[in-house]
Amino acid sequence: MGVGKTAVCRVLKQKLDNAVLLDGDWCRDADPFTVTDETKATVMRNISFLLEQFIRCSAYENIVFCRVMHEQRIIDEIVGAFSGGQVDIKQISLVCNEETHRARLGADIAAGKRMEDVLARSLARIPLYEKLDTVKISTDGKPIAAIANEVMSLHN
Image (cartoon, rainbow, N blue to C red; front, side, top):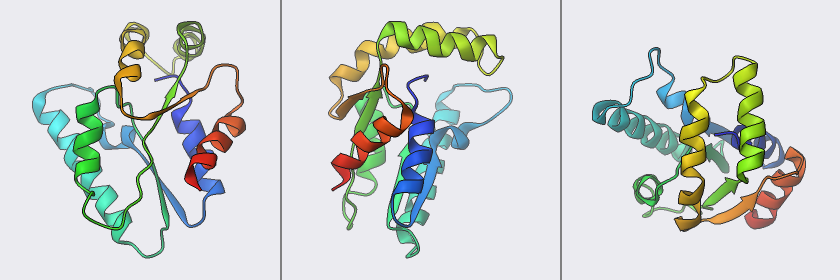
């Protein structure tokens, strides 16, 4: 939350050949938003189903997928569903420091785009990203295009 993942992924969709974007937030956009074992399982099934459909579709060469994945088990569950096929998966975590996080989320809260409770939850997750088996790309002080270019450099 607040690191620029959706903005970066939108740019990547434009830069990559025959690309499609799946934002994990779309798979759980509910009102009220509740987190239960049942809703978490439903979100994971939704993500797996949509990714599978994009993989099977010959029109797409690149699938850009973004979601808050602060625990390795979340990544492993999603990646594990596709490990048997001809899928080249790049696992990347966009990260930023606490100051950047506070500024970005604070602006979103002030603009009414996010609820106030998001800040504490997001700040608590910052240390968890270092434990992930992913390439980390810092978004601190960088424009979206530069971050997208860093991701693209890993694509080749």
